[in-house]
Length: 343
Picture (spheres, rainbow, N blue to C red):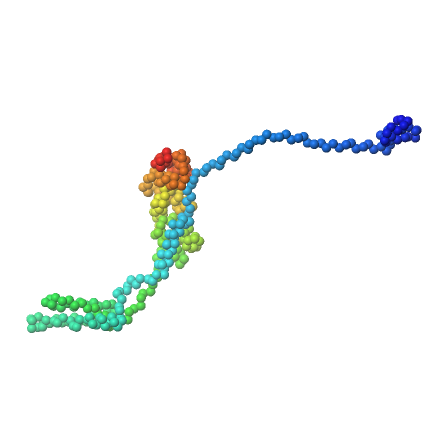
């Protein structure tokens, strides 16, 4: 309060006194100044180099063995079999009962007549003290055949005349026999035509290479094979008399001619669902019946790997003996690596 204004905002009351602005009834205090709070400055983080991830484990190189029907040599073999079967179907039948063909042309008849002997040898007369020999009765004409007659003169002349004459009384040649029809064996009399054809195709495959029961069924019913219905393929295969162990032996020998195998690897290949699909018993019996030098097979496998890429001594031994590799025994793998010259 003052008797005189002290500045801007002072006001005079009814008593004639001056009062400061904040005492006026309508005084509105000014808004406090807004101070923008800034976040504290960020402290620099120390630079930490990221830890590199560990390198992925190197899996052993495995030899991928594709199913048989996807291999080029099997496809070529199947194509050859198909060509042979088609050629056998469309080829004309052999006339097994046909004899030498008869040439009834006029030229052949004339030539035969020209070479026909004039007469039979003259029989000795009774003047020589020998009764005359009665000529033999004329033989009945033989149809569709060539009559060969050899007339021999007397021993004094020592000359032999051979003539070939076509019988003038020969009957017209009979038509060739009809093509042989497929007659199902008595044990297959209850098979449908489709099943009988599947039996024929199955025998053709078994004559060409080794097959397991399931492998032959797959081949006959596959859309890339013979495309028989699965039921007909099963009936056809089961109607065949097949030694499946002998077939497994044939397949095993084919694999051993192609590349090196361990005993367990060969059994797995024969019995795998991606391989030949023999039963485990058939595959084991087949492999154990063979006389195989597994050390030599391991050396062959080792050299194949070294032709493909580089290996250390221990790496090659691990690859040959791993359960994900070739499954040789440790001793066989060590022997092979040593013989390969890297240990």
